[in-house]
Length: 490
Image (cartoon, rainbow, N blue to C red):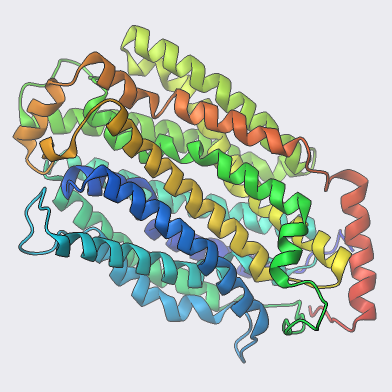
């Protein structure tokens, strides 16, 4: 059975293009929300930290709840496919609102209404995004019963989605060469990426076939373990969740880039003396970091389908994390002591490889864990299992954001004294930074992500859905499904 292919090329391409659209929009939040909150709206650090953490507490409820809703209801259009259609417009609108400074509020405004506005938009965006993200990344689970084919679909989807993220990241950098106002750059990004991205995302509701139709999840009988209980008792899944949570540093090479470009004290060429030159230097530094991240991430993603045929998922994850840690240490030493960011390019590229590997492989591992739970219990929790992955990704982004803000507090940079929306003021502030403050900012794209990757590797040594055990699960599941009358259409 493992050799049989179920998914057509048209379906694979459609799914990847939809992931591209999602990547265009998601990267707006994941890469730039910290800089927008801290250096454009100039919100207080503790508010941003609490917003991120409390939103993740809510996600711990919202994501599994969405997973259970998806698993319990099959519509006439399918179980997964309807959600992107109904959530696309709200996500686009909220993304634009997220990066708009409300009229009447100046940078640094301490108005309670501004803080309420920010919190409501951010939480609503997360809730509605979850309503599409969980079913979207659950689709490969119902497109094919072949784990190898499923892994390739996920890999291609994540790779093309990563291209969308790279486009979003690049847009404000390119605009920065011509427009020095940060608020304007982010408004252009949010509007253009939402208008382009969400129509592409909606394509996932078309030209994709749900071949595996499991019965709707039923309310549990008395004495039967709950759905959440099955999730928490699945040791391999909990190890993947723990590893993913500890790997938050993989996001920091991208999300911390604007902070490093502004305050780490690196210059390409002569030290800028005008606001325009400072803005252009920021764009250059940020572009170098982001290009390194893109090369490392996409380089890994391109080769992953071939590597899947030779290496276990666990092996790829551990090797990339340990390699990323070593490269991060070298990036810190070489970059800081030479003050030449160009010399760090090879190390930053290697440090970005886990971004591609973890984003792709952890999703495939989650689906293997769902197979494992079905093999053990007879219950298939497709969307709920994927909700764990969605939660981990958002938790990782939140931890990355918290770490950036915590660094501002550690090195005593007060957002009240910042005004990145005023280019002249931003130049003066950057030039007044101490050596310690510069070092703290640079650590955000070097040793801090490195330590995170090292921690990420530890739980994976105990993950055991590999080799013969994985093949046995796949073969026995095929028999179990046939006995239960679950048909797999062509």
